[in-house]
Amino acid sequence: MALRAVLAVLVGWLVLRHRRGLPAVVTKCWMIILLAVAFAALNGVWLEALGVGLSDLPPDAPRRRFYYPVYSAGYLINASLAAMLPAALLALLLKRTKAGWAALGTLYLALAIALSGILRGSHDDWDVLLSTTPSLQLLGLAGWTAFFVAYFLGFLPRVDGYLAAFLGVAAIFVMLTPINEAVLLLVGRDNAAAVWDTLLVMQSVRYLLQIGIVALLIRTLQGGGAVGRAVARPVSGTV
Image: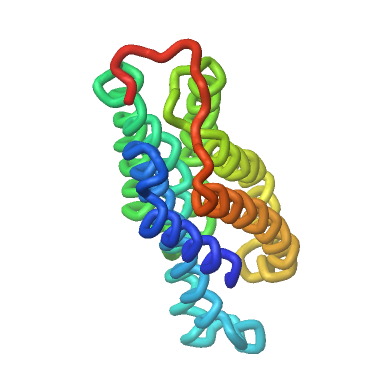
């Protein structure tokens, strides 16, 4: 999707050209985000290219048999990255604390769940794939809940409003993912294209909002504006 590519370019530009205007740990947060966004963009371009003309082929066409495992693998990796993102950010922002170690443990748990899905054949079996990802979604929801509870309680003093807004958009759409997957499970893999346009519209709204937030942040930094927020209750051991 083009919007994913635009977002990846903007975040990359932010990290490469404007990192001096941000605290070091915030720059690292944006680097983690860049990895997730860049993979999603590349995966989307790859799948779009493979999917051109796919609907015109018979169900047993070799190209379809190649496309579905590739699609399923990309879907699982995207779900894994979405689950690991809040945990990775918390592990970075709360390092050397018990909460940070717990976040790191959540990160490894997401990796273990993804690996179990691969071993059970998620790349070939649509039902296995959609029975693996709910566990990842649960971890993601727990991670985002923990992140924003910590943020609003003042335990993440380095997280500015731009970063919080960007991640808030991601968290909202993660909450909608179980609904999307329930629909996909209901219609089946061969009929998923029938509802795909609706899902693409939802994704487009997400990426447009995030593009706007990053663009505003870049504009603020270019104008020499300060980025940050005052926090009344910094926590010992945070960065």
